[in-house]
Length: 389
Image 1: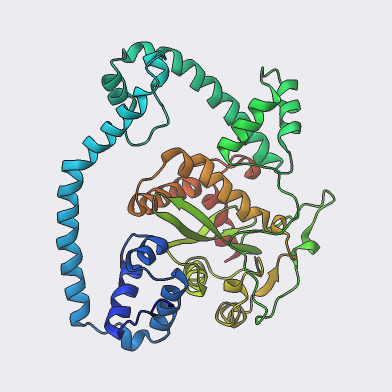
Image 2: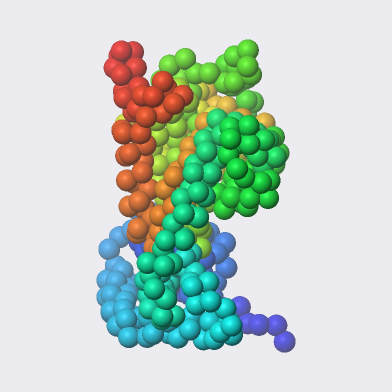
């Protein structure tokens, strides 16, 4: 017998959509909580936003929902404090019992997230100073190797692990091919070649696509060069992993100044996400001559393309499967992840959003960019915009 399909009232749908919009839970977490497909919730959100003038009226449902969530959050917090730490530590010690023949020092796991090194040493009766002395040397060496790998990869994203190995060997680093490959995997980097973009670019057969206009801006090295600020903007969406699932980060970069003009983090990847970012960028920085993106359904949507046309912005799109055509924003996302997100390991969406905000401010206003002659992206952008005005 087939499972009976669940029915949800309008109030129940509204309550769930409000949770998507207001909470810092991922879409997958909310879908799992209510045992609904994420796609169904995303459709409800779309309907809700399309009828916002009606749906957003203050209602009893909203008030009751907030009160219910506040009460449950307090109960959960008490339970977590009482049981969480003890349970994690018990599991850790039980796991180590099977390795009693090993040195206690070798049982310490530096990468373990739930129990810090100091607490692990206490549970295993290991002298902290002994552990740290040997571990720091190893970590420092790996940090140096990773830093140079990241620099090489940022400059030449087409390099694979073999070429990076030979380059580092030529520079005097003592490292083998296998270690280079392992550290690159830890960094999450691999050579970029023209190929199908797997994740966020989902083409819609119903939407019109546009030609790639940036080929006309290539120099003799076949690199796209924008001569001034607001000549070319690039937009894209990237996945950001969290403990509870993926969030989606949309951003717009100025191709010349490398400044991030607007960004937004969301638990759903839809047209509203990219339109909100475009609207903010135009409001703060005026309009570009050309806007480039991939052929994803969010960017080819009627709403997004009409916003561009309304402001007389030329629409440019990557060739099919050519994420390298949008390399400016691709490189920024990689820098953000390797310099901040993967290093900080944010434990909640609230922390993630605040952390990305701090990094965006640092990147735009403090970080010196080598491609700009070691100038700050937003300084370059604003100075050129003022001169043009």
